Amino acid sequence: MIKIWLEAMRLRTLPVSLSGVVLAVALAMSRGDVRWGAAALCLLFALLAQVASNFANEYYDYVDGIDKKGRAGFRRGVTEGDIKPATLKTVTYATLGAACAVGLALLAYGPWWLVIVGAFIAAGVIAYSAGPYPLSHHGLGELAVFIFYGIIPVVMTYYLVTGGAIDALAVNGAIATGFMGVNVLLVNNIRDVDDDREAHKTTSVVIFGRRMATLAYLLNGLAAMSFLAPVWLYFVLQPLIEGGTAWNYLRLLPLAIYLVLHVATTVKLHHGRGSALNPVLGATARNMLIFTLLLTAALLL
Image 1: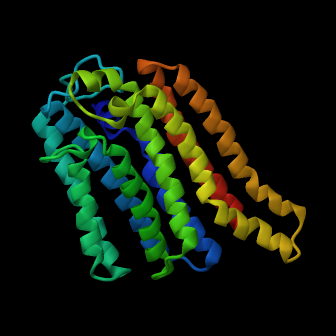
Image 2: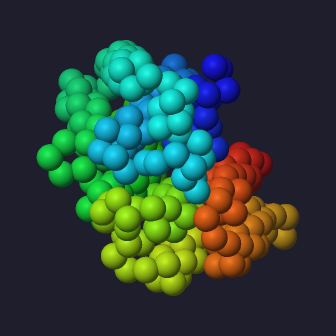
């Protein structure tokens, strides 16, 4: 039973929410002190919100008849009969409630309007898969991921852990994180395109086709590194201009490693079909986390 619930949590995708918070904290550390209490709460909130979103996606896709037994994607416990729908619904909203409780605790580190941001995130968790206009059913899933797993977590974490700062490094880091996060969803939607088309679920891949989605995947990774150019300029070139050594170029290593990994997963995405893309989805999230951890180390050298 534990394995079933771990599958429902979709652990392979959790690096998406983890990476945004880690990157924001790393950028904050590079400029000064970090409020570690706020950082810990931001990380817990991000993980709980994503798990709640994953639960909600599984539950509402089952209710809408989108998922079916033997699907190409990862096993869905409620669809296969391993989890009762009512139980999954209860756990979904309990997890979302826990995320909201953590969000309220963040008021100790920020202003009252954080409640509005938290309510927007909570609504997004459900609106992604449910409601009168489910975002993931109308080609808006990637936009939702870009906002909720890129812009919001990086900018808001940075704001909270620095005591109220927002600058170009945080914004560009948020955009880069959003592009990398979108790629995880693109792999998911490329893998499921036939099932989604049959179920009348209109994802971006259903609209634009597999070839365009694969090209978007490649370009997203390149765009992510491009938007981090201010980071490279600030932490590599500026020290060199001020008298640093060639060792500063080692800070470009995360960029090189990510690009190599990204091209490799793009090739696998191009050639893979159906369940063969499950490892590519995990690898895409892994690339994102590896890059974030390496960048964190490079920023703190």
